[in-house]
Image 1 (tube, rainbow, N blue to C red):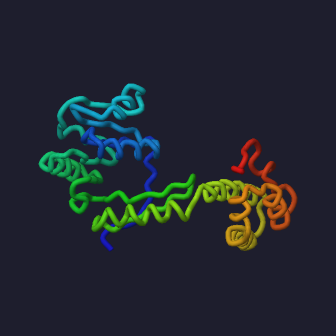
Image 2: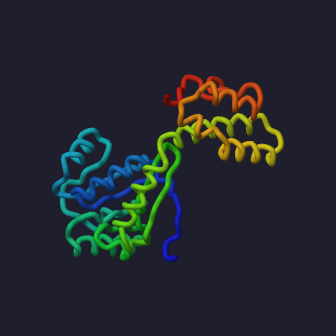
Image 3: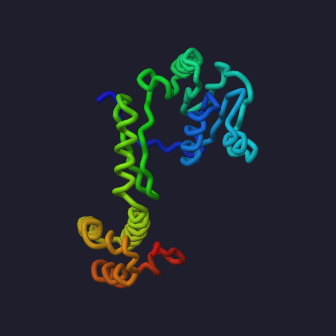
Length: 224
């Protein structure tokens, strides 16, 4: 296995995207979803990027790429249609010790971007190590059908349960058994059905008083 799978926290990290076309736009949108600080270098950009720049959600340098653009960046993306330009960005990033990704030749970069299925805090990634993006997309679509929004709601609830149990203290082995029991039991099906009363009964039976939806997630309603 060539690539080491890891999820990196890029919130407030400076990231550079060279290229303002469709590919660059996709890169920017995913970076913004992770709360990165994004700079785009390109003489021309898509309407989406133009709007984001107008809203000050990204910084747009409306000019040709310069080697100094990589200075201080955490991640760099080569997303232009010009192979020679992407090569130049790769060399500059490598010389500066910065991780680099390129859309036209993933193997020549220092990291690749997997296909992603996101359901709230649940993030499922699919990678073919750059061998077949088409297969990665096909597998992602299958996973999107299998893992619906109920998994986001399950994680929201389990996070609240975990936080309350940890605050209360107690035996960690018992907590582990409780978590496993809830995840492997009927809770997901009850969430899928929107059966709030059933969820409350299951939580109370398993965890005891004080573990209802209203008490764990005040002001938050799981979907019906």
